Image 1: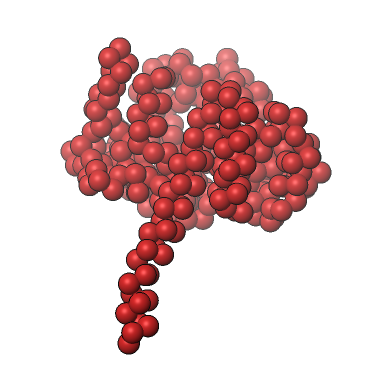
Image 2: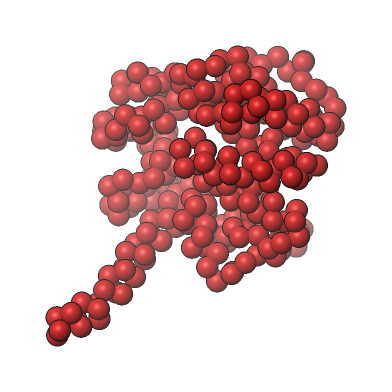
Amino acid sequence: MKYLSLLFLYFPFIVQSQTTTDEAIWKLGWRMWASSMDEKLELAEMQFDSLLNLTATPERRFLTIGMEIKSKLGKTDVVLELLNKQDEAMLRQICTKPFLSGLLPCAEYAVEKVENKALQMELITMFVNDQYARGNLMHDLVANYQIDTSKLSRSGGVLVDEQNRNRLKKIITEYGFPTRSLVGNDAMRGIFIIIQHADRDKEWQKLQLTNIENAVKRGDMDGQNYAYLYDRIKMNSGEKQLYGTQFSKVDRANQTTELFDTEDMKNLDKRRREIGMMPIAMYKALMLKN
């Protein structure tokens, strides 16, 4: 009984220590991302090295960012060493990155294989059109998929959203909810954006939440997609959001932000960490920069 009491006495501290480590890794990874976005490569590299000291298996996002930093600094040997440690599932997900595609461990996985190329192209064109209608011409996708921008709709976002939404409904009816193996990663990103912008058909948008959740569980979409859509649906219903993705006010002139009403603010960062999102303070700062 004495030893059992000691176990219960110390177990909470063990759990707390693990939680603290997970939180430290999460915050360090996002600081590395911020440094890389600001082109502070030497600092970002130091943060990546610290991350590797904390965990032998950083999550895919941070691993890819770290390897790109090493690549920009000319440390291809380190990138190759890291690639050789990855399993096939990870290589399939990361080797399509242009900076990795020419390296030997990625030779087999550099070109993403999809089951329906025509559907992939259609969905990516819809994605590009969505962004084009909002003043964002996605040069990387336009170049990679050789999209003819002269055929993009120059109508306003509302009309483009309606056209995309109606076409996606037909695609889902015909094929079921698409998968990454069917149409590829970029097309899956486009599907999420089309659903996220389906505010004029809230009932259909709400029905897609389960599809997005299942796609995240399969690894076909990022966990952040579920969070953004969940909060969007809650906001459209006049309810509190859960992940802090939606703002009621962003005042860049005065550098202030206000989140849309949010559940349990005390544990907001914990929820964001669990689903793969950056700390809320960093997210607010990012919104004020853009």
